[in-house]
Image (cartoon, rainbow, N blue to C red):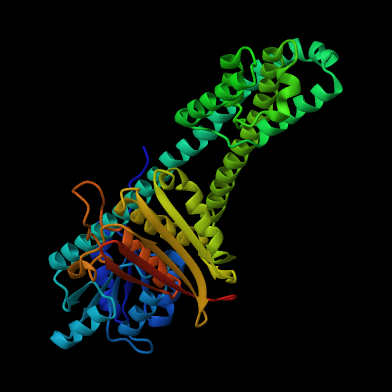
Length: 452
């Protein structure tokens, strides 16, 4: 049976008697305990063990508790660790100072054991809940992406499978008819035959049923006017090939002894060529998706800052959302010349995924999505604009707060945009929103940093 993990607590205090009391209390209550007796050793210990919670004395020589907390909250690696201040001072102003620098609570000395344990357990549970919700938010976003990816992969695979079947049938028919046909064609007819194949290859693909029917009627009328037999059968092949109703270049074939067999052979040629082209397009599309996934996985495998392209990160997300975009979203991209920056690429990908996903949902996958990337005042600016219903002015200041959501119960934890803001803060950037019905714009500003 896997042992239950004990929560770790770091005590930062310079008074031995206080340390002794707290170590005994916390150890007996099932916590793992570490101790630091001054600010410098506390910062080193926090970096070493990453405790689940910190009990921090306010009044210490050297770096005091308030300054330690400021540094912790300024560091992306430690900013989410809850800090409970301890002090003999009970003045409200001192408590406010502690909360202003990022403390979550305050314990007044001498410490009341039951109260201290209750506060510690509450804040540990709050942290676990926040981490769990943040993870659920990530998994929900990942699940959304995976659903899109499954469709994106299946679509080209289905196209490849259908095209291979068409090619196989067409090749079988070609092998039966082509050798004999070529021996019978005159030079003029051979030129007309391969011209027909070339026209079919370059014709407008995927005519609608209505367009094909209209084209067939025009071809039948043209063939009848030229007194060509089997007009209906010939028109069926030619319309499926997308051949226009101007048939003068084909007259040597149409006046041959068996024009239906000749045109059918050209039709099978066109099937092979067009379906081969479809396979290439499908393979290219699948390759782009696989590349995006490999890029996403490679970025997610490291927690270190690396040089990366913001535009590449956005393109990765757009590739994964391609199926949702193709439902009815007009996408415009305006990419300026911007440098790569030192960043956490996987986390920026999460930012774009959240903002683009929200934009698509706000439009119900019907509307306009605009993405602009440019450099301004030493920063990279990313603007994501959608034509959705907009964010009411009275809640625009709240959307980045934890647990705030406008979605129905069960459809979101309200942490998505809060996580986005934390990631942007981690990059020393800013995020702004401007919204009215039909036009919502999120602007992300990232400083151009090339070295740590």
